[in-house]
Image (cartoon, rainbow, N blue to C red; front, side, top):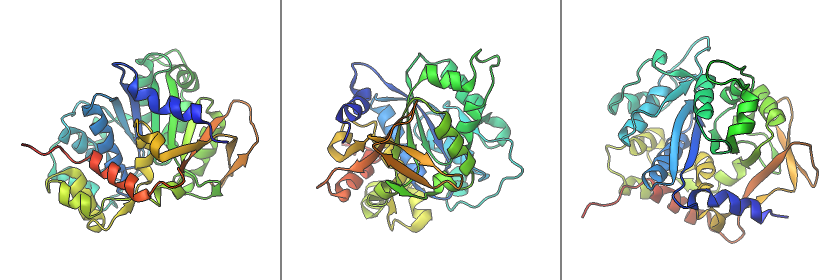
Length: 324
């Protein structure tokens, strides 16, 4: 059974009178290019008055990933959005097809790791300063930073532990991860499957999973985006550098699209069951089963909905309005 009330509550977040959805984005922003468009979508929603983007947590070991995020935020006129980063890594490396170029070609202030905030600390800062039951956490990478938040202790930012902060401040979690009804997907198993196991075990708020099988059907970043965006645009450059607008699955963008009032036109949720994760990061949906403290659902494309229609809508969200 598809839990229609759950989906309705989800998409109505942004339509409450004068309300903005408070969002923390946790992205890897390195190996694939879908993170770039997902972040740009959040800025489009912010410009429309639908989203308050509290901060961007970058969970990556790419040495330009955090600077790339800052460059995108700055391009959209938001240089003050704080950037969190995993600082306790042995080494960083440059491996992305686009992060260095975007960071070098677009102005921004954050150029060194020391200018970022430790990811779990930023999570704690943003949650502690938010109203109760108000924040949507969107993860579109692996879950190391989220695990660090959940394992964090009380400090000067809050007398609450990380898990207590989540219970008090977070409304729901939108997670690009897993494959449904069963499979093995990169965000869940690479490079830190233990963080997936931990987070899904510890998390007791609502969580909606956007699986690999959904995003792979929705190809964005093709010729439409190439023809509609100005060349001096971080989204244009990222897709040009990644595969020269050959198109790419919209894995991460689906998680962000769930904030949109049109989400119920495209998607439905399966909520009769829960996600179980093995130590290797593979997962299975336990259909019809219940587990104490788990409020899980996963996204499916509505039958009869052309994936191309969803892709065009996603691409159009990041195209700036034409000047008259």
